[in-house]
Image (tube, rainbow, N blue to C red):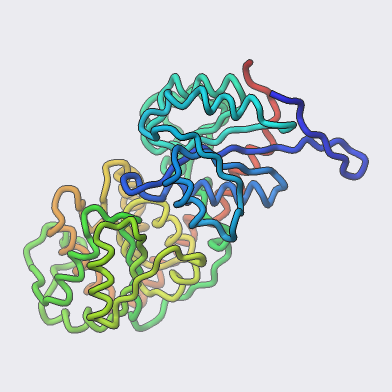
Length: 386
């Protein structure tokens, strides 16, 4: 690797740090990895660090650039590899790192497909960080980040720096110091089931609401009270803000529903998510970073499980009584929808309860996690390996 670029600031030598973010997004894995890396990347840039993105294929390049705040926000390097077989891309990735011109290079990896060999090889070339929520093995990296875990897992032994807990949730800057107050009347509902919504939770929920076929027998409704037919008219009059993407295989169906029902609003590639959340009175979201964003704003919410890797975070929120879970769509979509209907019914008249819930959420998340991660990366100066 070339020598570090040195700049003069007030007569002092300053080494320019550059962070390479290795991540992907596509129809199968959705966009969550890209979104949280972008949050950390922007925090790095605000701390005068250079940023580059490394992705497997042109599809990921396109998805990444669609989410830039402005054209060419960051350089994006395509490795022309298979995102599911990371070890095969090692020669190309090592070449990029080894030939990085005149920079103090650091690598930040966010992928569920990494192996121990993959990370160990990369750590030989530069300080390496990994964002984890799987606890798959003891990751051979310099930094491990896991914002789902309030207590440091015993399996994290190799990483010299362990950034764990909600304080390291990598939210965008817009989620800092948001002014939000619960309103007496419920009118607007925030809906997010991930960019792809593989279980079609939102479609199933709308079918129940607008077809007026509410069941009273779901186990998942127990925490909220059983749904009742006489409340369906109220639910039909609420405004539903659906956050999704064109990667959603049900996207056209949602567009058709929005044409039929003026209370359904479809949002894609939202730039100011905090502002959209702020106008909503209740939130429904799959497990993932969106739960933390809803907390930072303070929108009283309920979660649903749509993938196995979401379970720990969803359980953590539920155990702390911050965001309860309406159900596991992977196990039973029908019971999950029952839980969502019951949640909406219970909270339509619960002004005081919504105010208390909002305060608990905002106390849990302050929105500065991305900057804490970026600062740790910037201040790490010990060289690693060969």
